[in-house]
Image (cartoon, rainbow, N blue to C red; front, side, top):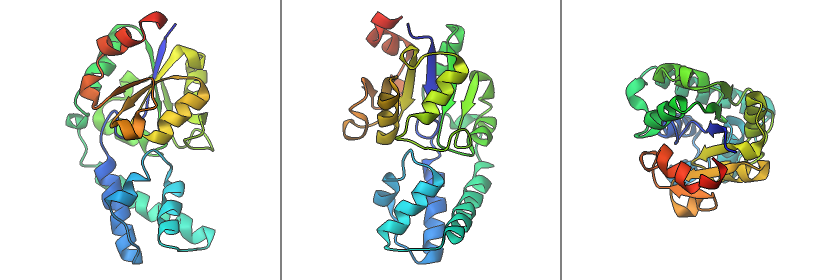
Length: 219
């Protein structure tokens, strides 16, 4: 039986992707590195440290570990400052409605995000009350596609993975859900999240009724 829902944050609950892009772009420009939207897509769903390594590999750059940490921290400072502009109007269409409906139906709900700034984002959205458990980049050592963040969330919810549905917009996020034995809902294009059990182009389409209808054998 499905008793819990686990949501990624960026690209599912809200879209901070543009803020991340602008922060990475600013850092890359300062470093003289190439960075564009195509490369930015490869950062979807992965941690800050993994992201900077992807950018460095693309630019054939090698740096000492302490310098990498310093640059990743600088990018995060740029990003966190930009979060101050977020408001409760910045939910993706359909996300707030789904969270509200799940609460009304009595389901357990967790966040499963690679972001270390997830709580700040939820506070800006005034969304903390929707979640029983917050799993973020500070919760586990291994980021997606390892299933650790979702396993952390389900354990804190006191549910088995098979009792939970994961909502993800990243290929690596769906990989993580599958690896952990979770039901999966992909948000985005076929080529990115088509390997999820159920896929919607947008969160607006991902209503409680649509999800319950698809997984009807598990409710």
